[in-house]
Image (cartoon, rainbow, N blue to C red; front, side, top):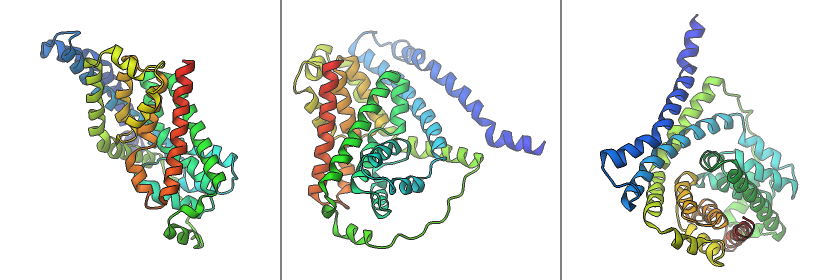
Length: 345
């Protein structure tokens, strides 16, 4: 009886929280319409009315989706050991190693702030530079949160398209960089660290179910608590595009028939500092206004995979030539993806 009571205290809140989530998600749209057009008395189909309704609907919707996706993903990630991932990759050569690194990049947690320790840890464990780059490209560009949100907002086809093209870019970029032999363009202090003998590591303990749930809850606090301002900022931009930008203008600027739409999308995306959750409302608005799917995917990949903050952090471990090569190869892959899908879709 005591065990049953403890079970309810520790885990019984999960189904209750899920029911509350479902109820809140179900009322997002009607509540946003009532607030915008009933409470605020804005005119439906007007620029301001459509912008406000978009913001009031997408704000709670994206935050709710992000909360659920982060909880589920963090729970599943508790079964994956980054140390074992690193050790597995150190035993693989180019080709297979790049493929595995790209796949591992999708399912392992990664952000710009962890770029340096992960990068050095992989290299020091004997993971080839090209394989490490495949992981470095795949982890932020096709992270699991982005996939979950894309699936929830746009369906499995676009989510699969995004994941597949991202994996190809990560695999190809790492393979090319590995063949160029650019280890000498790492910063000298990194090369000195790599000469040291790796220290032994303790065997990792397997967390209990309660600990996994605690990790998932903490993941929601950490991630959602950190990115919600960027999400609301992205939704505000999306709302302005949705309400005020004419469809013909956006279709002409980022349409599939405009040759400069893909490089323009990449150039606009690189300086932006955002994450998948923050950029998806903008993507939603762009697609709704007639922007081509290839150009929109290129914009999203540039924002997530080639952000300036990450480049600044990587400068601490790489010389400018290596960074420029890395950015150039990834950007070329993104451009090719944009042009290919604008041509076939």
